[in-house]
Image (cartoon, rainbow, N blue to C red; front, side, top):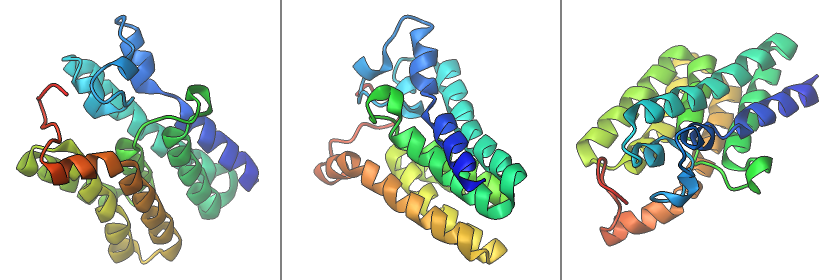
Length: 193
């Protein structure tokens, strides 16, 4: 049953909503800004509605994977399905394993696993992004908040451990952003890349 949850989670996570939505308006998001398929890069097209839809859909696939996994095989299946959705988002088979960075997806997974922890992570993301004007900083802070909040609120070691692993992968996915932040060249929110 866990293999089914992993397969469903990965396929859900692999759906490149940012790419699909921007193609509807004649744009290949991979040719815009950073080339990333996520919300922040979709926002660089100037279409706030598509960016919001990308955020909701990328978070939604994390939620859906956890809920489906839980229905299929309980909490362990929920954990592995959520993890697979995150991996699918970052490394989708349809895009030669070059996907997004996973911020919205980890938020969705956390919301489904521990709703209050997910809300704390979401607020962390918003505050971090607004204060620094860097979406990447907000995203990395939110990723770090996910396992910490999940642990303190639920004491569920399984979720906290998996979310910590996802947070580490998310920060690795941001390695170019980190280099640009250190160099002072990272784009700010609302700024064209």
